[in-house]
Length: 212
Image (cartoon, rainbow, N blue to C red):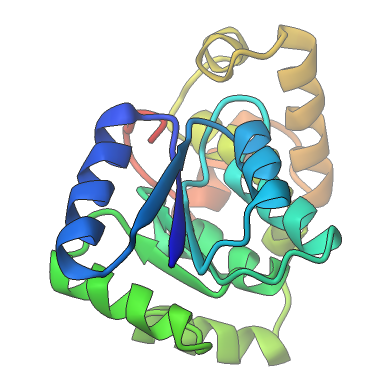
């Protein structure tokens, strides 16, 4: 069996590798620090499961997931991220992820999730399952945001300026300003103050965090 771990943090990749080596009989565990390398490896290897982070430089995990599915790669993909489930879980599942797991989970839950997706089933928490069921009947403007727009939204809601966001995401100020304009248009908001109010009212404030 083969597994691919995709995360821009070496210590996270090594930690997951240690856990998987102990709990599973994976003779081959490959690592990728970003989406581009993950795409390359997924094209030349047939993996039994891929564990992938979302927030990464360059092509993020969600964009990588979408590209893999577009290329016909059917490998079970478990998104393992530090992001709040309410921000990305539904989007990942709808984009073709086999499961979503928060990095704050205990080892037993990680093992359970990997076992489930390898067996061909999906893995989500009860909270995500409920939100997924509700989303069938309800849609909202927030669902229109892309993965990058959600990142920018979270940082603006935490009071970050366009310049700071550009530095944190390794993007130009103009690119971040474009994302901001798209966010305001999609959410029918006028300025950052309304965006922050929207985030608070809709429980979208994630809190101070690093990109992990």
